[in-house]
Length: 270
Image 1: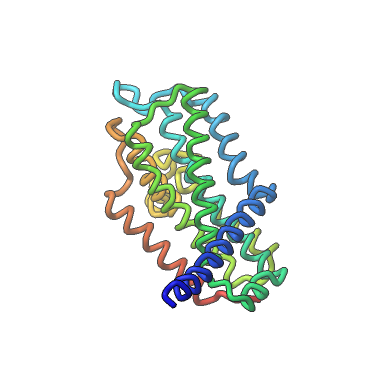
Image 2 (image 1 turned 90 degrees about the vertical axis):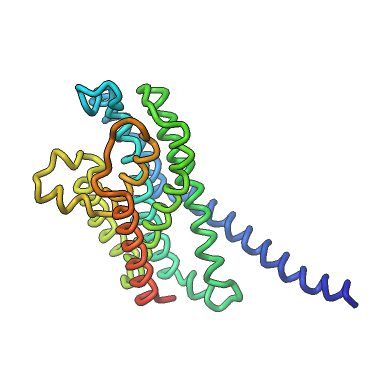
């Protein structure tokens, strides 16, 4: 009797696991087949890293400080955040919009698939891609431009990168939730993405912007996330954050909470 109950209990669990793994595999395949997302998330940050590295990469950030890292070391965390941002705001938002427009979400709603499994599969898939992309950028910067990073800090940066992937995914969902058409979502994502790129200090150092834009830019999610990623990677190299650590982390969590609230409030299956 007990053996029969154990078999009955384990069968649904195994079926759930197989279903989740199939869903995870499907997410990986769809991501790799999305050429637009691969360009913005992978190739574009790599291209900017090579371009800026060739122009300014060998220059120290602080000319009179012997411990000052090269500009390329300062730049790589920015490019990691650019990947996170493009993945969440462009890739994830567009994917959710396409799923809804093509009726995929409506079909999922009629199945027994829990919503949390759908979201968890996307989070796992995108988090692993983002960590892999981060280390590709790091390897390129070290091999091509002799960038220096804290070895321990690289490990410490992994959970921060995963946090950034989740935050920007939530922001992407917040963009896609109230908008019906995928084309409109793409336009809105691009309109938001580029100001975050330039005003958030990813492509242009915040210190070079006018004071008013500096004051605004340091509170943007791109600047906040870049500081959180950069802090462990350049540990011990006299590179300060724009804001205190706990303020920066708290502000990022506020962006996450607000994004989740907006996505939950306006989410539609069709």
